[in-house]
Image (cartoon, rainbow, N blue to C red; front, side):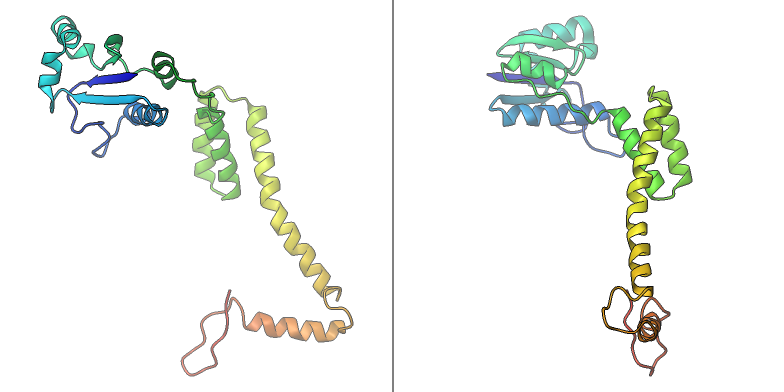
Length: 211
């Protein structure tokens, strides 16, 4: 099985270069890499770098004569034209090449925005939340789903804080060190506090450990 792709004029073999990259080209390049991993032979031709390949292929030459560059990209599978003027999806490539189509990804654009909303809550980032809330709303994500993402993120965020509070309470009640009087524990805690997370010691003074 052989897949040949005839691309319009691009700056490089994949078009994935420069400061403004077309997401469609990134997606298609990844789809072709996946197709290669399935044992399919893949070739790409760039109009600006390999014009002779376009002139020598009758189907491609005809498409250029009738449609111009609007007929590109053109995809052929075992010599048969399968698409012209648009980049096919991975599922389409898989079907044409006779390989098992990949399972649809659960990580949709809407899911990505829910993850971003959760991250904004975890990071206490107000502008991040507003930005991703707006994007999620435009994608049709329900307020209920966004609230579920917020609730989950807050629960994850609160868990370590709750654990640390419980740890502090156990120490302050003297439960963490059996047999050691609470008064002694308080002195040790004070000494530890003076040696951790404090400003750097001045030159000549004893060095202090810090988290």
